[in-house]
Image 1: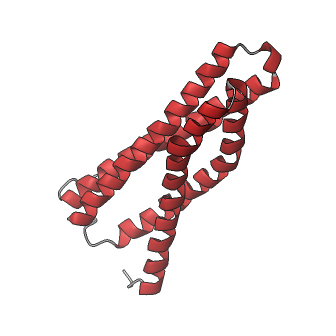
Image 2: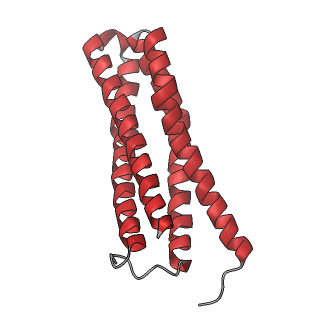
Length: 168
């Protein structure tokens, strides 16, 4: 296998870190700062509209970051001297990476539910404001908040798995 130029590897690491910071940072900001502030200052139906507006902007960024993480991560894994095969658990590095990839798969599923189930339900509820009960609005808010926080927790666990891999 040809040697990868150091500038290409550095670019890959930088893009991977940039995508990680963007995605995890946005999840943290929304979960910890934005949603609690919206809950204290907006009416439930306005909160729902606010969540929809934020998610409309965040979704393309999140999916782009995820794509970039997959591409750069596969490249980094392929050039890593610790890499012993796809399902290898022979070292702390490979076990950590396997756990990390499992968590990423769960995160993708959670994101898909948000994108293709919850957000369309929120949009429908907003279009039918007069016909949507306050209980439905609250339920949608709770599901969206729960999924955002689940993704944040998964991101934190992924970063922990990454730290274990780097420590080996």
